[in-house]
Length: 62
Image 1 (cartoon, rainbow, N blue to C red):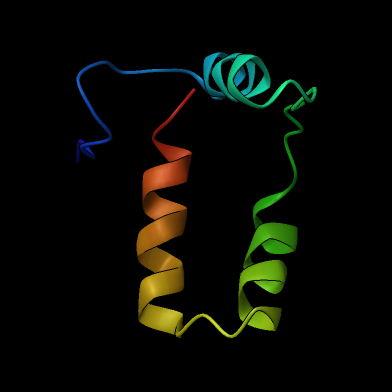
Image 2: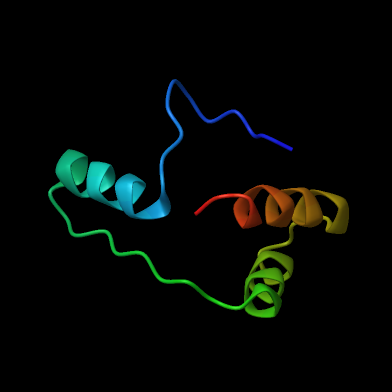
């Protein structure tokens, strides 16, 4: 599965660097366990089906 995020495939670190440049605030990248990510998304109220779709896309990125 390949998600579409724009004209280039970016790593999370590259995204953090772009956001840092755009906002002037350091945006760091931290890898967290899948279970912790699922728990945070559930706590935010994300429906289970969407949560699993997001997890599938994020696991496909480096």
